[in-house]
Image 1 (tube, rainbow, N blue to C red):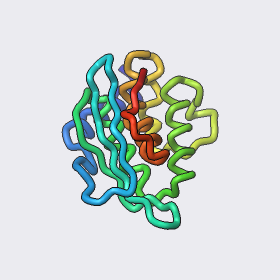
Image 2: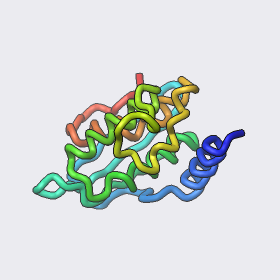
Image 3: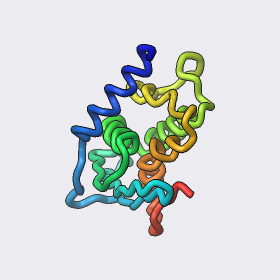
Image 4: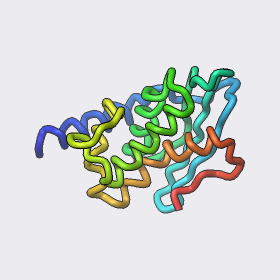
Length: 151
């Protein structure tokens, strides 16, 4: 096992065991439900966005595999204080990362610690796990009424 694989496993296990920003936000301005019918991952994402479009707070609740929970946990940390356009840009970068289109050592990006998900593209069934909360967050910002699905 190489160093990046070991780091990936440690980060996933840590965020799965102790997810950050887990729970329902009392008065969200935006929220959405996300569901992966293939594996049963099911989350709600809640955001509080101010009048200037800055994300003051983001939380999530639900259940899923270690990868989906860790991704949701790290997403909430990454989005705190970002503007909604920055959040969408980060979503697009993250999606490109997990499908193997963004090479973190070669391509410009703002992913920071989210780079740990760079190897997920090698496991196609896990890509949807890692991306579910991000698609749900995007759906929340678009005020989608229907649950976001990975299918």
